Amino acid sequence: MTTSDQLNRSITLHSWPPRRIVSLVPSQTELLYDLGLKDEVVGITKFCVRPDTWFQSKTRIGGTKTLNIPKIAALQPDLIIGNREENDRAQIETLAERFPVWMSDIRTLADAYDMIRRVGELTGKDREAGDLVQKIQTGLTGSPYPATVGDMPSAAYLIWRKPYMAAGGDTFIHEMMHVAGFENAFAHKNRYPEISPEELSKTRPDVILLSSEPYPFAEKHTNTIRDLCPGARVLLVDGEIFSWYGSRLLHAGKYFRELRKSLNLA
Image (cartoon, rainbow, N blue to C red; front, side, top):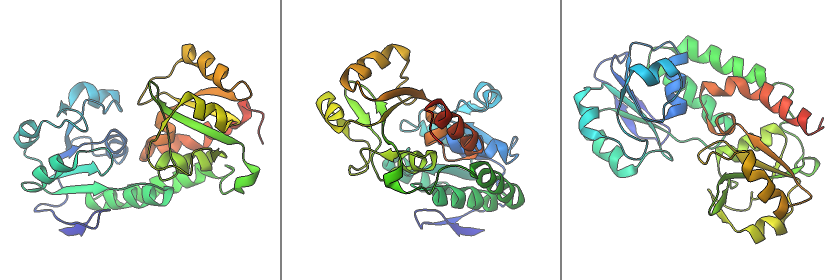
């Protein structure tokens, strides 16, 4: 089977459907589980914490950017699934010299839906993938998206501290902020820019969202943020909901509606 990935690279699988899959990304690992590939997945990263049964039982092949290539090779995968942003390019190129490596590249919900469907086709789970996308879309029905930007409260989404780093306008998090009904206060910046305390204060967002990952913001961090932006609502939010682009999206619609309700937003 020959196909292409989201980087428009040609990928040839010498056996289809694949029987020995290595996943290099947590959100896509969970997707493979929900597609029913319980026996086919043989390797995951140390950050692939969902499902817990896999985290406990599957072979761990390093971190997303620190892959243990000899350990992956020992698993003799007939398919490796990674992501452009989350994995190291040099390591991916090394793996691709020996194994079929399918890469995702996701900035929007449309990209996420496309990835889910194409991974389904790649693994012989077309029907399951189509059903999953439909369920996600149904769950998001009734969310503020696509609301007029001027009607949405502005929000800063922080992913790191010391230094503070925010989600910029060309990220999947930016897309999910829009789906949740927020205007990204740092939409004019790219990727994950460093934000000084003075810049955050000057920006004066209506809401500041503190993510649970990759930096594990906690209640103890909220007072410092409130001192910088006394007029803002400061909330701890589930980073998996905002940044995981696989089957975790099934929970997004309900989560966003509850989040807006907590802010007394329509």
